[in-house]
Image 1 (cartoon, one colour):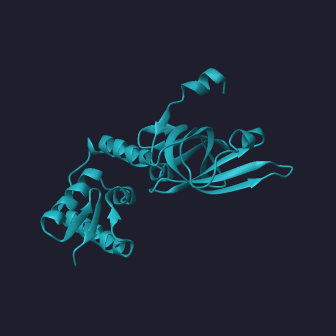
Image 2 (cartoon, rainbow, N blue to C red):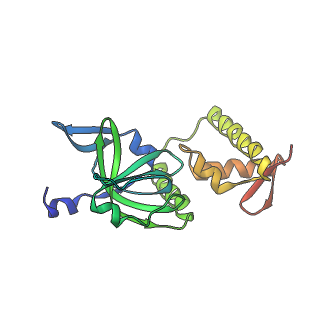
Image 3 (tube, rainbow, N blue to C red):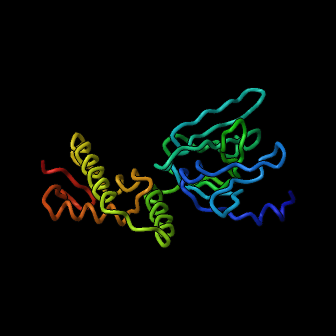
Length: 208
């Protein structure tokens, strides 16, 4: 693949959970692209937290990072001189990744081109951005699905009592397949019903 061909590959914005359900397509033994719906994905643009780092400085120099965005986890792998290029990336950082998808031993991972530190708020901003795009063509939830969602939200709020409440942003990130607008709508109903209260903006507690 020439440099000009390489640059034409779009870096699609996805959540990790979406990538993990994609189908790896091979050209012979070589990974060609990830099939996801009607898209053929080679490069991705993802925001997540570095939750683990493993570096080997031996004869074969390499580094593996684990990236988590609340919807799933994926490995970032780089080798040789690239280890030095990304040496300042560490566990606990929120980062934006642009890189190429690879697949080896039935594992899809990312070979990063860019790793740039981000404010943690961008995790939520990216989820909101992608959910709004997805919701343009989504089917409204059935009544029983809404009831089930309400119960799950209440369970999360009750679990948060041990920490003095739970952040709404945190809940939105943890509900992988539910739109932020739907979560906010159900929280508003619970507040109006007096089942939960808001000790401060953006944080809720159970009144049970």
